Structure formats: C-alpha cells, structure tokens
Length: 352
Image 1: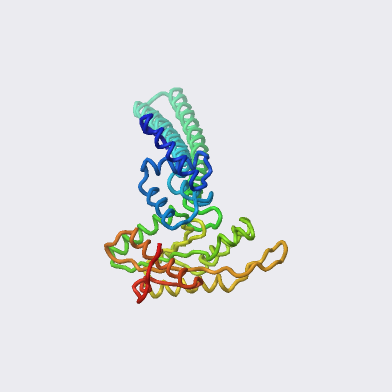
Image 2: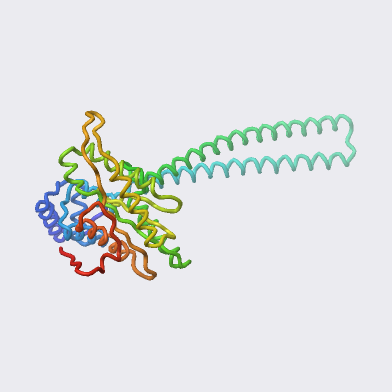
C-alpha cells in the first residue's frame, strides 16, 4: 500500500499506530504497521470496522488475528501481480498465434497469385518448353506452401500447449487466491463473493438464503495446552466435518481464526438449523487423539449461529444476526446451535 500523507500527518499517524500496537501487544513488523497505520488514518473502512469489532469483543490481537486482517485487506497485491503476469504471457502467446496466422495467410495469397499466373499463361497456349518451366514453378510454389503449413502446424501446436499450461497456471492462481491453505475450504474473500452473489440471486428470484456462523469452543485453551500444530489438526478436522455436511451450491469457508461460515442458498431457516446440528454432532462425536503419542486429548465442540436472509437488508446486518446467534449459543452453554429466533426470546440480555 502506498502512503501519500503530508510529513506531519504521517508522523502523527505513525506514532499513534506504534502506540496502539504497543498497548495491544502487537509485534511491530511491517505488515502489522500497515494494518495499524491504515486504522489510525482511517484509510480502509472495512479494516476499521474489523478492528473495532475485535476491540469491542475483547479479543486479543494475536499474530493469527493480525495475519488474517492483513491477508483480508492487503494480501491481494501479490496475487493480482501474479495474475497480471500470467495474463500478459497469455496475451503474448495469443499474439504469436495471430502473427503465425498472418504469415500463413500471406503465403496463401502469394500461392494463389502464382496459380492465377499459371492459369493465365496456360490460356495463352505456351510452348512445351515454357509449359515445363511453368509446371516446375508451380511445383516449387506448392512445396513452399506445404513447408509453410507444416511450420504453421508446429508453431500452433506449441502455442496451443503453452496457452493450455498458462490456463492451468491461471486456474491454480485463482484457486489459491480463494482457498484457505490450511483447511482447503473457501477463504474469507470467496465467502464474501459467494454471500454477495447468493443474496443477489435470492433478491432477483425471490429465493431463500441462510447462513451458518460456526466457532470452535475453547479453541484458545486447546492451543495453549497442546500447541499450534495440534490446533491446526483440529481446524482441519472441523473443516472436513463441515465439508461432509454441505453439498451442491453451498459454500463452506474459513471465516477467520477458529471461526467458519457456510452460505446455504435455497435454504429456509429450519433446514439451515438441521445442517448446523449435523455439523455440530459430527464434530462432537469424535475424540481428538495425538497420533504420535496415542494420548486422547478430549472432545472438540462447536457453537453454531443460524440466520435467514431478509429481502432488502444489508449483508452486514445478515452476518451480524448470525453472529449474534453464535454468541448466544456460546453464552448459553456452548456445543449447541442457536438461531435468530432465540435472539428475541424472553429474558435475553446482551452484555458487552
């Protein structure tokens, strides 16, 4: 990201950013500085909202949280540069194909002119000696044309193979840009796209749309007790369980940290609750074991929040309602599925 603030403004923002990083125990490396400078300068509204959300929830700015913030808001530059590079290579390959075809076309024009000349001379009734010469000229032109076509075929085959490889590279880059590398689920970027497209389809075709927000209970304590490597295995286990319970046009994603989300097009609230319950039971029914030592580490449970889209509402409000249901599930015992109906129940009080 380029910063173009005047020197005095930049100095103020830098000092404020470093001060906030120190207060929240954030390491002062360049990625984190980019996040907090942008927050202080109010450069990226979505980033500002995300940081304010973390501050409000009381969550700590761990390296994982900061890394997720950077990846979501600033991590696309490298991917975009790589996509541009591959795109330029494809353009170059296509340009070479066009040049080959132009050369072949010119050869075909010249060959056609030679045949016309030969035809014109034949009508003049040439002598035998002249006729032999004309035939030899046509044969030579034909040989040249055959060679041009042979070279064109080779060049087109080479270019075609190159374009096919570049398309594979492009598909791989797109996949990497939208996939969480640890779990293999869609990443936050693809979640945002899927939710937006599903909401537009729901609005246009008056279809239903539901959303699950899923969080691993006591994941921080598990990480602190057993280490991040086993924590990563738990994340993979949960991701597999979610994938096994969704299908078709559903989009399962890693929303950030230990939180997951599932977009369920064409799903009413009750159906989404059933999907959430299926995911919860699938994970709760397994025991986590350290494969190296054989030690049983206990049970992993999930809290799930479910909401159904209301036509005309903002996506932020939709996600917030599912999130509120998720926090309700946590506050009322964890290892359960709560939904938007629970939020209006009697005696419910939300505390900061």
